[in-house]
Structure formats: C-alpha cells, structure tokens
Image (cartoon, rainbow, N blue to C red; front, side):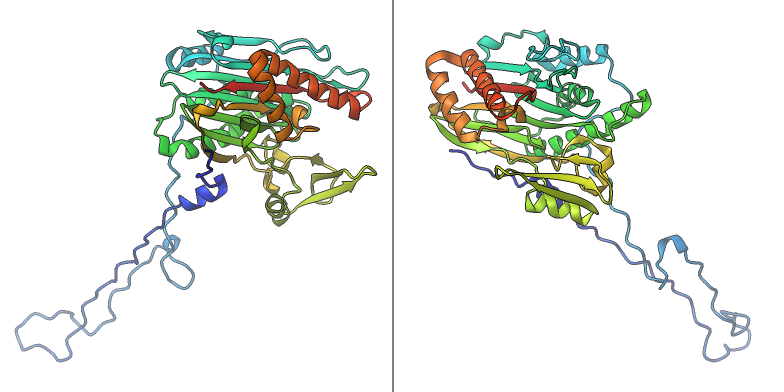
Length: 409
C-alpha cells in the first residue's frame, strides 16, 4: 500500500505555526490624594492635591492608539547548520567520512560532446550494482552547433544510520550546471548533519531546500556570476526500509512503482496548475500561455510588463529574478509507505525523460525489463526510449536526460 499522509509543504508549515500569547501591558497604579485633609500632625500622602505623576510609555511598544503591540513571533526552529561561505573540498570529504557509508555524484567537469555520460565522483564503499542502484546522466544536443554543458546532475548516498538519499537536479540558464552541481552535493551535506528525528524530517527537508537556495545565491554574488535567470529543479527522496519522504521543486519527478502499477508520482510544479498560477499572479507575476497547431499548450512565467525570464516551472532553486513574484524554493514533501513483498522500485528523472513519456508508461516498461534483465539494462532502455522520443518530436534538439533507478530490497 502507498499512502500520502504528510500534507504539502505550504500546508505543513502553516499548521506548524505557533499561536502567540501576548500579555497586555501591566496597569500603572497611582495613589490618589485623600478626599479630606488628614488630622493635624499626621503625614500627608501629597503635599498638595497635585496631578498624579505621568508615566512615559515606550512608543516602540504601543500602536498609535496606545494599545500594546503584539510581540514579534519567535524565530523558526532551525534543524540544520547555517551555511557560511563556500564549502571546501576538504569540508565535503570530512562530512562524507563522518556521516556516510558511501556517496556518489556527478562531477562538474566532463565532456561537452552530445550524449556523453557525466563523470562520477564517489567516496566510501560505493558499489552501485550490489546496492540496488543504477543511473545515467547524459548531455543532450541543443542545436546543430551545441557547445552547452550538461546541466543535469544527480547524487546518491547512504548515511551511517541506514537512511539513503537520491537526488536529481535539472539546471537551466547560463549557470544552470553550477547551480545543479552545487545542489546535488550540498543537499546530502546538510541533511547528513540533522538530528534525524523522524517527525522533523518534512521540516528538515523544507529548510534544506530553502537554505541551499540562499547559499547558492550568496556564493554566486560573491564570485561574480548570476542566478537572476539561472537555477535548477530538484527531486530528492530520503528512504529507509519501506518508508520514504519524497520532496521536489519544479518538474524533475519521482515515481514509485510495483508490478506495472504506479504507486506514487510527484506532481510537477507548473504555472498551469491553478494553485501555482494563483500564487504567482497574486504577487504581481504574469503567466503567458501559447497554443500550438498540434494542440500543445505552453505556459511561462514573466515579470510584469517585461519579456523575462519566461520560466516554465513555478518552483526552483535559484532564479532570483522571480522569487518576489512567487517562484519559490519551498518543496512539496510527501510521506510514502510501501510493501516490500511486491518488489517496488523508484525512478527519479529530469524532464528529459518526462517530456514525452507518462509516469504510467515508464513504470510499466521498467517493470518488464527489471524482471527479466535487471537494473542496468532497465536504465539503458529508459534512456534510449526518451532519446527516441526527442528525435521523433524535434529535428535538432534533445534535452539532457538523467534517470536514477532504485530497486528496494
């Protein structure tokens, strides 16, 4: 069985807000002069019937009408260390040694040749074939004279306490490959240092995404590159035994399947979604829709009265130009519980896979290949199917394609 019991991130955060009890200002008691003069020889409360002494109110603590201002809300509870400055290779390595059994992620460098596989850096006892893991991260071909880098990336990790993590990021814009690469490394770096109280995991994941967005923005500013119109989508799953926490921003997607059945899919954050569009328009953004002759509808986000940036997803890491108009870095987080007896599996992929294939189609195809030919062949077949879809639909364009497949024990 698969059940979604954790509300989306926005609802969960609202539910977690505390009600503040704001006490009123203490009343000022001033003694009144006696109504009749005291008997001769006794001390008087006041030498004369003067006005009571005035009380100076702190104007910063009262409204214009003199009523007490509400106390500011307490700062939100922090679950993760604060990121300050660049994380050095030595700091990453120290974290991996202390907190993980193994970790692997795509390196920043690599071939710019179309369809080249991204190189992988790994630490610890990394043996994907024996761990029930397979992946591919291949550059696309964006035009005949394409010189762009592969902007997708991924990471896989197992922490000392047995929890595992899989990430898939899809970069966009001039510096999308930098954002995606920093994100796939920094997300496990942060989460590995959390308290691991399971009831806190949804809040931990929300904080991690938002912290990474702020961190990458600060690093870009310090180093002289921009995330105004560069960013990445992200999907990350944290799992142990038969329970998983699925989190995402944008249109990188996670599906969980079993015996040709789709048990769970994350819902892409697109400006065509009513709730996403409403948030963006309420904050002053614009969503433009273009209809094509084949019936395809394209929805993109713009800053009002401009032609920028034309973003096709409604949540992301980076993209600071549209953060004030509702393109948030806050993920949706879902809890999924599944039964091991039906051999469930999970696929995380960039929209290079999902652009032309549905979640149901992918799950059914993967079930058949997994049973007969194993993980590696399943991953290769998924890549080739996605590539063929691009070739059928486009003359000289294919997006970067990344897929991570996990077969649960």
